[in-house]
Length: 317
Ligand code: UDP
Ligand code: MG
Image 1 (cartoon, rainbow, N blue to C red):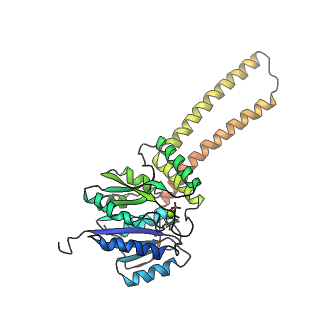
Image 2: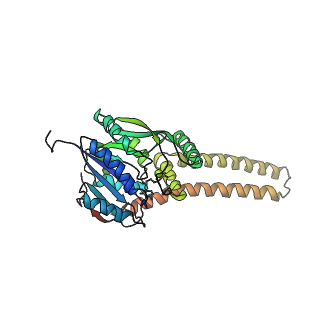
Image 3: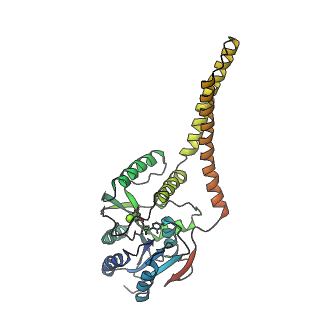
């Protein structure tokens, strides 16, 4: 094999305030990458870290041209960081992995082996995980609930550790969608998909960078981008409450004809409360869609790059 025909693997690592894990992550990952028979590049996407993550990364990049950095102008979020990695990677296969060593780099050869067999999307699936009980519980309930609603099933116990073939990356780069839920998208695109199972460790050091607000945003992206359920819910509620108001109207009319109109203060308040709150529910669902349309129409980029290291500035096709 000449060096031109040797394929290349790109590894994308989103990092947000990960000074405690960067060096350890690199040591473990380098050991694996040195053993594979492919060329490789390791792209760190620094998602607006405020600690010493960036200087640590620059030190690594100065020693090795295959270590590349995309430095965001501020914190845009994990999904955006991975997307930037996809945009600038030039490997034949692209693997996204967390920096905190919860996704063991030792699994990379297994992901590649499945790819060599012709699979185009290889998800790393957790057979067990060492997260807090609350995280496990909320994640389990959320995915069960989500899969009840979705047309595109999202595999359970799958995070953002996966390999994508260049073909899939090509599709991803063409998607104009701003609210990106990569777990949903990577199932939705189709292609030949498979899994590799692994045991998810505890975070190597530091705390989770997924705050509750970030988790809620991810969850609402999943629901609103991959199901029509909220819109259908608004329709069902309208029908239910529309029919019941017809019933109430008939009842009031009947009582009036019967000359039986005792002023029922409590029931009036109750009815008013029910109908105003249902209006609010429907309005809030609609406003969620409006805000998403607004966001899309504004056309702002989903991330802004401040600078890059060892990277060819133009996006790779
Ligand atoms: N991350 C990021 N931007 C963010 C939040 C997280 O780039 O706004 C990175 C983080 O540095 C890590 C990965 O995304 O490499 C997963 O985050 P974390 O481990 O904190 O999430 P958890 O495993 O707790 O869900
Ligand atoms: Mg983690």
